[in-house]
Picture 1 (cartoon, each protein chain N blue to C red):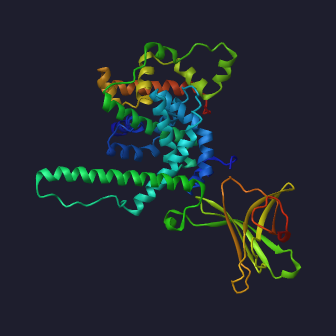
Picture 2: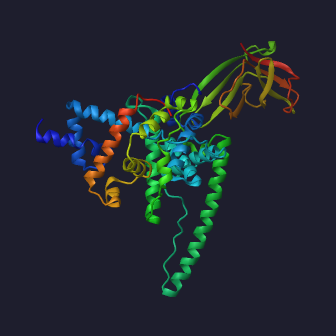
Length: 189
Length: 263
């Protein structure tokens, strides 16, 4: 079972083979947990999100279609949807935001690229995205944090920044274009 | 490029982020296959967006989370099965009181009874799913169990010269929710007293008991014996199967004569 592809494991999951879910958990729990924790920054909430993601894999009617892309991307989409729902619910309760401090935002691009560890990391997708982030402006990074990681809509962000929707949309477009230019190829985290 | 085409091209990001109307999305989906620039743009968005998640530290989840998740998956199955079977018989109907003052008292009583029923049902459900983790679902819950399929079948030949017509089969039956190891023998000599047939799985020269069964003397001489054992591990690994006739059903090593064996 450990040699099976994610597509094959998902087929077994559809047939309610618990071992298949167990193998998927072993392979991807850290990805889902890391994503959730990065997004919500609350251990208990991150646990709940991991549980929701794997329960959804177990009970879902929607299929993972291997022709439409990598399993990791599909799983991240599922995770992001669940995380965004959680964040939006939280915001309805608190009417607040999970604010990033200026130091946290400044730390994102990273400047430790002289070390051997950093050069190895650059070969990975994580290294690539971090390298690409260095080409973004502060407002572009802030927008990605709010839009991608905290699940705000562009309309909400336009109101929050006091800017026209078109301006915010254009900023996101530019940010993604810059990132695309600096990503060499697809890789794994 | 016409103005209309350009307007459609401008929709790319809005459609990508889902911040557009249904009409705009459909219009763009019709436009996309024929517009090379938009297809390239779409692929670029996909690549950049698909890499964003990688900007995070890898953190291992707490060790106990896996058990919680697997239990939650099982519980979700139960909830779905219960939902499919219809509402649980928790609702207790109460006749509305004639007086207003009486109504709140009845509400309090019915709410308390509902709470007690809910608590009992939760304990019962918890017990059910604890048990279901260990053993196959019972026949009463057959609607929640997918079709069984034989995953492995091993013929068993009689090893006793006096019962040369006897034969058997051992198989692994899987219904997607649970697996069982099942052995049938026909034409076996009836057991008497404490005697029992014992099934042994041989792996790398080591014999392990797979269970015991008895053969009654009152089945019109068919000598029918059955063993059914749930399988917990991911795989049931063995080289050969042997069945001995033992003086009782408590031995952990073969003591009696070998009666059946796989090839």
